[in-house]
Length: 136
Image 1 (cartoon, rainbow, N blue to C red):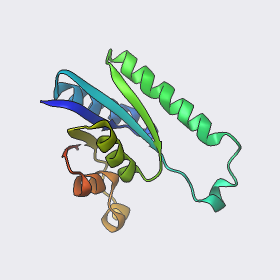
Image 2 (image 1 turned 180 degrees about the vertical axis):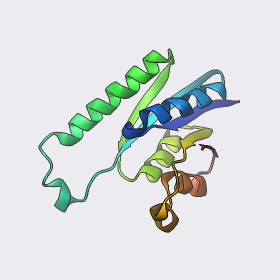
Image 3 (image 1 turned 90 degrees about the vertical axis):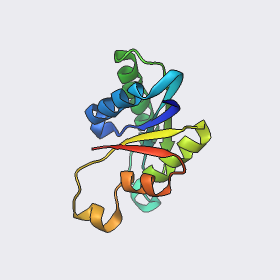
C-alpha cells in the first residue's frame, strides 16, 4: 500500500481520470493521500500571443473546479495541484515535491505520433524514480 499517490488528470479525459483515481484510492494506505495533478501545456510565445488575455488563468480556474467536483463527488480527501509546462516533466516534479511513492497514470491508445515521440505515460515510466502504475 502507498502513502501518497499522484494521479494526473487531463481535462479532456475526465472520465478516464475518474477511473484511475478509483484505482489509486484502492492502493492507498490508511491515512494516505492522493494528489490530483493537471498540467496546462503552455503554447510557444509566438502562438500564445493570439490567445485572449486571461486564458491561462481561466484554464487554471476551470481545472481546479472540475477536479474539486470530481473529488467531492467521490467523497475523497485529495490535494489539487495545477501546473504549467510539459506534462511528463510536471507530473514527475509533482511526485518529487509531494514526496509521492506511486504515480497512477492512464495510457491512451497508441498512434503513430506516440511511436515517434512517446506518450506522456511512456515518459513518466522511463524517468520516474518511484513506482508507476499504467492503467490501460
